[in-house]
Image (cartoon, rainbow, N blue to C red; front, side, top):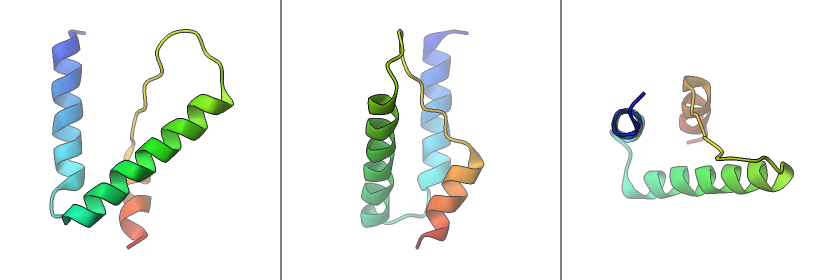
Length: 66
């Protein structure tokens, strides 16, 4: 799969997930993702890149926190 296609799909998914949220909610969302990434990567030592894949359950859980 072409890398540009992956980036475009990620951008489209983020746009859909964040649509309708105010600036504070978007900042909270990204802070949560950074927190999750830091905990995940510090817990494992893996060779090669780590890809964070958001599924709908994570997005719904984040929205339910409000």
